[in-house]
Length: 319
Image (tube, rainbow, N blue to C red; front, side, top):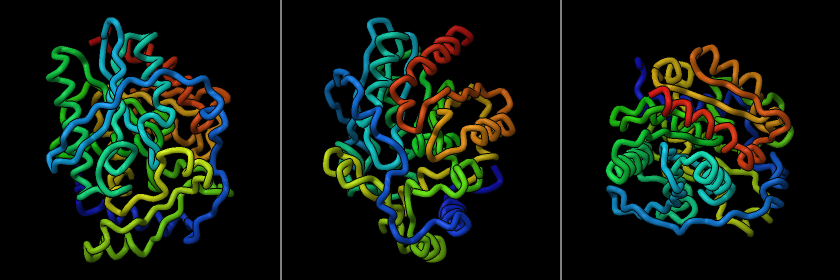
């Protein structure tokens, strides 16, 4: 890729915040519904485990182990939440119905992982953490195919990882309602209640002087009730936002020669489903693309295993 992650990540974030006209004041209103997740029947959670990162941070994760393993999915949550904030439905469904071992980490600074809330020592450290888990899975389950997936800005995170110089090999990428950043132009226009608001000046200063990487800069518009009743965090820093926002999504997808699949809900409150699938079609013509009827940004987590499972099994069979 002609551009490098380190130089343009901050600059692209800054330009995106300006051109998207994101309001500077946080709007405390629901951007999408938690209703389906909160009312869904609970599933049993496997115990928390921890891996020690290169900087000695403790990275929390849950491992959903099937009776007979066919493949492995390392799956990342979106911005603000954590691995058991709805993603347990993916792990439970894939492991029990499709024999897929699923590992769902808490990104550093989120959930039960250590680190300053919403922050990271550097953008590269987040990618190094992903590599740590891939190496762990390769060693723990030799010979099994490892796939990398993510939901919402977790999808943006894994797309950035796909062009990380020191990335580990995987067998394919799965995107669930992925937030691809402003350059993709896939968000719903004139959304009344944006999911997040940003302090654009901090991205400008960090891009120019490298002085504000650890400053809280993106604020999620969660309700007070959600923040009080869960481990969701209210904000992430410039560094963390840069890790989760694709720097050049069109080029990054074009360079992905591995199997790629994307699913998004028809009624997603943040992303335009037609624009997202069209973006993948244009830049990853061989990707598998599907709009799921009636599903929304979060409700799709409840049924995602029904779509991810058959695709993963097909990939393993065709290997």
